[in-house]
Image (cartoon, rainbow, N blue to C red; front, top):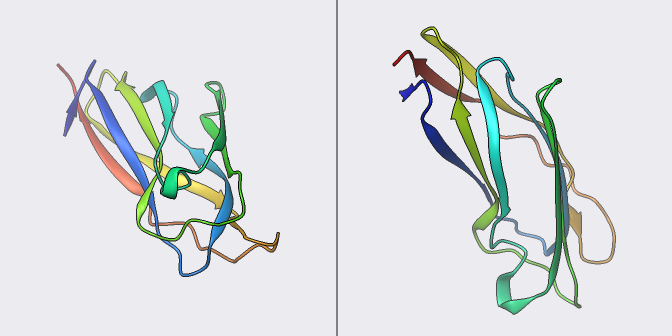
Length: 130
């Protein structure tokens, strides 16, 4: 359970049996219950010391986060790692549950093809007043 005003983190983990070089994804959240405080790149595409290009954009009115992480160099990442770390502040003033949902994820493999990756299950967060 998360209390009103608390800041908490959600880590998005990834592992692949094919070498990945880019991961665009969209995440949905309830902007009446949660406020994004920061988004940082994880270590998944940085495996082996590779350079990366990471961008994120938050639309607080629609409750959507867009993230793209791309690896440079001639290899892809496969081992378990974090795509991104999301930090939220609970702003709901009444007891409620809210959901974080990965709406789309479209990993790109080495060589440019994409793989079909079903989104992970929704993350339910219980919020309580102060």
